[in-house]
Length: 257
Image (cartoon, rainbow, N blue to C red; front, side, top):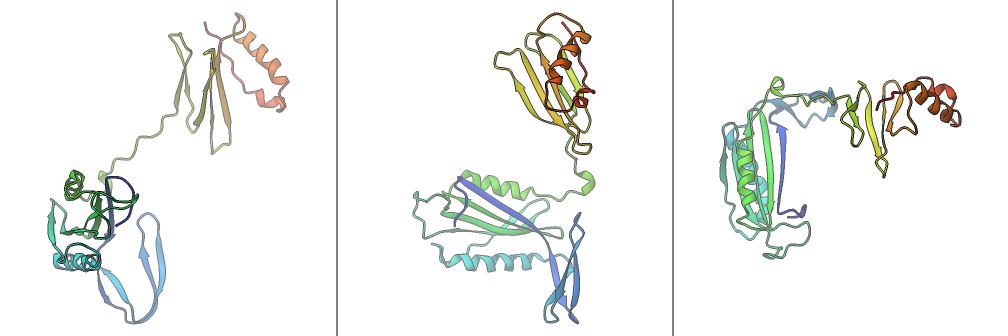
């Protein structure tokens, strides 16, 4: 039983539960993938083709038992202890076994001595799970099982989308009570720098759709002046830049005390 080196490791997966019916003749079969279209496979005539329909609890139990018998060969236990797991919407079975190749209290990195594994019905979905621990009495095991018992299906309309990333960025000069607020929809700001002496700061962002790049500087002025004086000073500096001078034609300068 090998995996990550954390004290408790939980793996869960959800599969579409299906029953089977015979394929009358070979041919292409399409399988829908929610939000991703479908995939098409050429199915041999001797194979089975999935048809929608929930599995019974007895089928889920046999599924868990089949997995358990394979693991039992390397376990300390001689019998497979099947236990039910029941929640408001999830119903299934599980087993817990001990890896006989790993000594108590001396697991190597990535190894776990104790494993709990099982599966449960969730409507027309099958939830399978594996819990790995270093101790048989690990509290995290019970916590993981309680989490799984609370599994429920949520309609797509109930899913709350993540909040949109705000286009607002605020620059505050150290020691000042005001801030410069940028509202630039479509721009992502991935660079922010502050001078070591605290006399200035800068942010840089880009708009992937338009290809525009923006740099905003907030720094202490070399001498008193208004926006015009500020523009003239930086215009002169811009002329020494290797970039075409037209790149600075959209620059905006603001002066504030």
